[in-house]
Amino acid sequence: MDCLFCSIARGEIPSTKVYEDDRVLAFRDIDPKAPFHAVVIPKEHIPSAAAITPENSAIVGHIYEVIAEIARQEKLDKGFRVVTNCGEEGGQTVGHLHFHLLAGRNLGWPPG
Ligand code: AMP
Ligand code: ZN
Image (cartoon, rainbow, N blue to C red; front, side, top):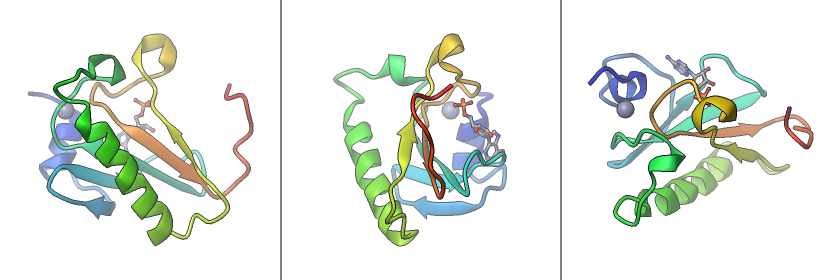
């Protein structure tokens, strides 16, 4: 399957790794929107947040455990934001479920 994040998860496309285990990979975003910007993905291909089902939703809980671990590792003590863009109007550009982890500046609210 031609999926950018599956290729990154397989190591075929290089990335700057922040965290990895058997189910999850986190790497630096190539076009960072904050001083710290990582993308956290399940290694399993799930197209978007709209494709979460009772069968595959356990990975979402694990990803939030991983996010808390990265926050400790990277000392994001002042706070951070987790964002999942979904679909065209949601701003999703890569069709593989991912969680943006942003920190290092005042992120503002609401998002644009
Ligand atoms: P989204 O627009 O929410 O689908 O997020 C996709 C994100 O992937 C964007 O923030 C891109 O900057 C990022 N991205 C695209 N290609 C790469 C890559 N090769 N390595 C790291 N991040 C990437
Ligand atoms: Zn994929």
